[in-house]
Image (cartoon, rainbow, N blue to C red; front, side, top):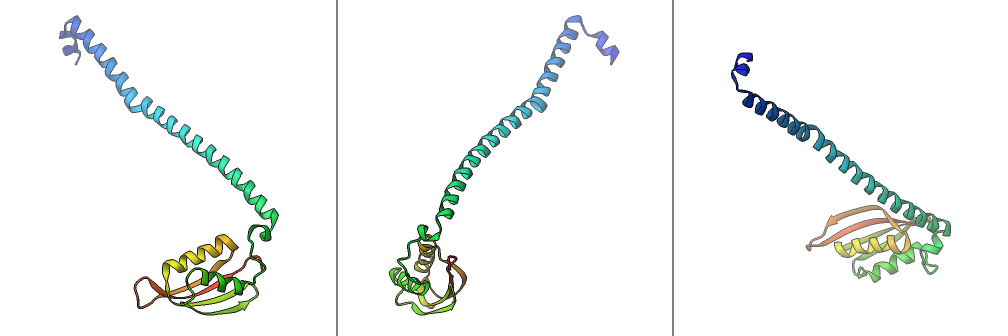
Length: 163
């Protein structure tokens, strides 16, 4: 190798030395420095997103605390109706009157509802409205396919957390 290097002209040796320094600098940039900069930018973006999430969670926490301190009566207006009456009336409003076969109280704050040949979409919308309007949730949900497409037979146990 030394013999080959000593046989090169001074100009060739200078060009090879400068070229090797340039190649080493480019490799340093491509393999170490640029990935480090990209990682730093990515971490900065993650920090900004986490700070935005924190601000949202703090405001949501304040809203939740305000709702909880007001009690469930201020959040859900039930018009003085019992869970049984509310389940019956809301099912009829949700166009499930023909499918509604039976509603029975299970215990304080719990009722069972039986639907036959009910539209699955209407049933899902009804349950969502019970949750969002009145705070009533489905504790048990048993469903089987009915004869017609899109229709189901269901047994649902509704629970009133406020009871």
